[in-house]
Image (tube, rainbow, N blue to C red; front, top):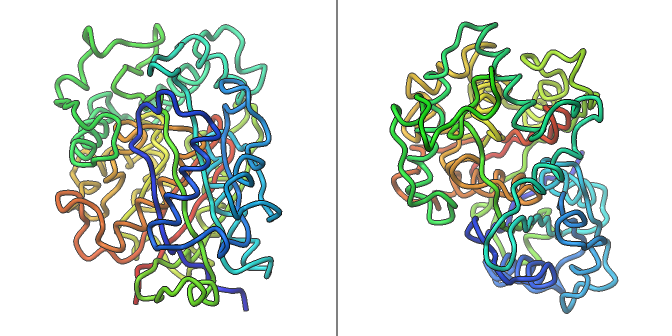
Length: 402
């Protein structure tokens, strides 16, 4: 019988700008601030993993695991750096969980970060577009300036035309997420409000990004700095930390799958790997979509929030956007989805994103989010973290304390 894994603590920075913090500073803070949530020490940690995607291309820093090992008490331990595009953080969680499950330790840290802006908080949009484009297939880059917005604008166009969905339907997703982000003190866009009219209609602040395709500015996630950390433990690890299971969330199930990187030939409206990973997470947890009333989905663009709602089984194919438009994804709806604000309003620090999804979902199950965002009777959560053009998928299912 496999060991049960619990989320003992979660911590994140405010998403947005990390300014003059170096990668060394960020790793130090991610480790120590996460442990501080439950009064733990580095001596109590057995293993760790850190996810990042642009550390070399934007920060000129590889082997980030070695920076984690520089935190006093972390040296000489099993620590690895992971890159799986925007699913790097989710992959770090799975790495730590599997190490604990096979007996490599009892307590582990899953960390993630991204620093995409300079010391003054400014970003080089052209450079970031080029760097993120590296996570696509070379054949998919031809003729595209901003590769990922272009690829997902094509997905959005396909979704709209195939299912008869409107741009306004998808705009309701952004509106709900900005409203959620306004209540989240960690959100990058906490002070920005967006009406349905502003999100649905093209204008000076909401321009079409690619000629002939439906994606607009408010359909997009943010360029974000941020870090996050999860402290995971077995039952023996919880005892070591002096924590009770009743105060922790169980990482009850998880799944990972990767589809071919080239978008051509794949059915992006029915992503095989994503659905397989989600089914596996449900199987391990012994739960079904009907049991879930909290979710955090990888909404790099609004269309992915719609598709993600379908992947976790809360809506039939083609009905994901309608689920949001009907208010079912609101905090007080049938299933509170992206109550954090999602990548669109909370922010998208690539390597930290998967960590933040699971961490916020855990806070929901523990009743630790702001009251306006708290899902009533939160009992079980699903997360769906992707990397690339719906290529790598990491899914988890969490259970509230008994």
